[in-house]
Length: 346
Ligand code: DNO
Image 1 (cartoon, rainbow, N blue to C red):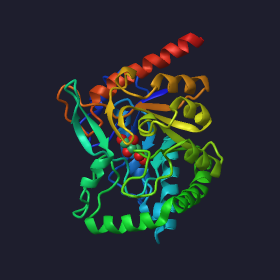
Image 2 (image 1 turned 180 degrees about the vertical axis):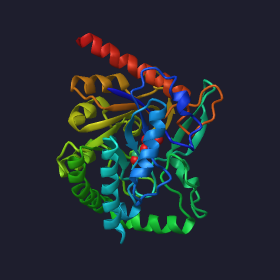
Image 3 (image 1 turned 60 degrees about the horizontal axis):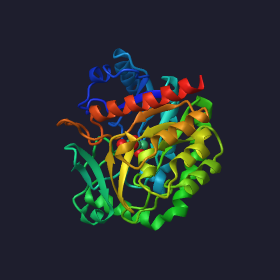
């Protein structure tokens, strides 16, 4: 496994100097959040980020996220232009040595939570999701851009997007995804890049918007539709693990050859569609991270892995889910599991 941590760039209160103190880090996951979906990641912008990481001794291991525009997801007049821009970005990333590219195909939103700082019993805070609380969202004034989300929208823009996405439905969203993959996977193959589709987070429909990357059947269908190693998956244990029906170790084994990137995150399920995030340690939640890692390593999966969201510990202030403390503890735990497994097979 290639151990990584995510860094958001200049908006990230966690500095690269701080990341430097984490032992056994093989590289950094980063993106260019200032370039909105549909725009090209130019060689100059990529080089600036690459150099910044290199100055701190880090390789830029994964691009996360190369955003896919709503015109591509929902079908809009700029679709072809945006697909071409995405392909150009892929080639530019490959030329700079970034060979894993994470993206998602969730209409309108990336991941969502209903509480960004739920106090836990241990005195830390964590992000939480309660399905009934979605009803409290009021989008009439729009949605601000968060660092972890690709884009913000005005109220009117959101209303139009909601209308289009709801009318689209799952089947046509799937068609848009396969059309996108048919265009970008050959470019990825040629450039030597693996694409890593992030599952829906949470893995069920929100606000009546279609979602198609939520379970084994949906993922299987997408991987089969364009059957190439370059058409890969981000195996996000937190996103998929929020649904009790997802058997994560079985999915890790089934999709192993196509898993290009791993997000290791733990959640505590508190209802059929309710959960909050917890420490990576298995005692804290419902995700069998050891089982997942065991299956991945038994299958010879050797890809970038990062601890995903953690709690905010000891009063830390950071991008929601992306405090350094719990992620660093989580990384150490994951490194230990992997090292023990490797030792047992040596
Ligand atoms: C959340 C992340 C996601 C992920 C995108 C990939 O913290 O896991 O925002 O980067 O879904 O496109």
